[in-house]
Amino acid sequence: IAQEVKEEKDRLREEREKYESEMRELREEKEKAEVEQQRRIEEMERREEENVKELERREEENKKKQQEILQEIEKEKARAASSEEENRKKEDRIQELEKEMETAQLEAQNIKEQGAAEVLERMECTLEEQMVCPT
Image (cartoon, rainbow, N blue to C red; front, side):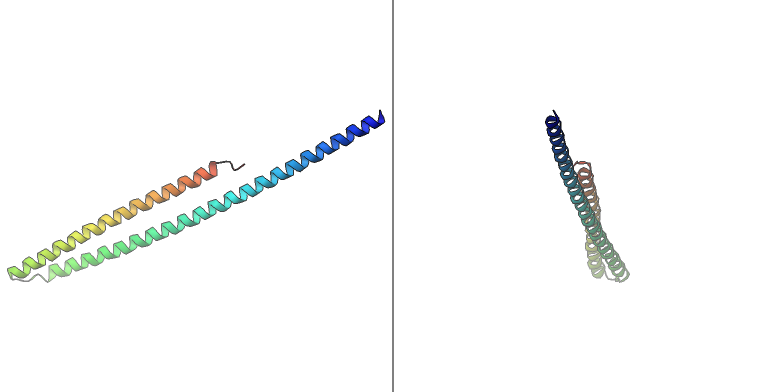
């Protein structure tokens, strides 16, 4: 009977050691998965920040272009000559510049919409990754 008790104790000890080893491995896997998920989130946030900066830069460039066009329009209006031919030519130029201005404004709107869509998409991806359980 003492032999059976010893064997039972040994068997239980082995099972406990096996269980503890499995639990250790599971904890390590979970920690690795969490670290990897955090790394991916940080990378996505970094890329998102870069995209926002690029969109802001493009928007600023577009604003400068619009300002230059407005200044050019004003210069052309100020130079309007008294002769009909000169006035007609300058009106044509003003119309061209106004069309350019309209195009620049449409580009600015597209940039803003594109930036908003990209930010929303990245945030959606980030949230989805945070919600997904890696284990």
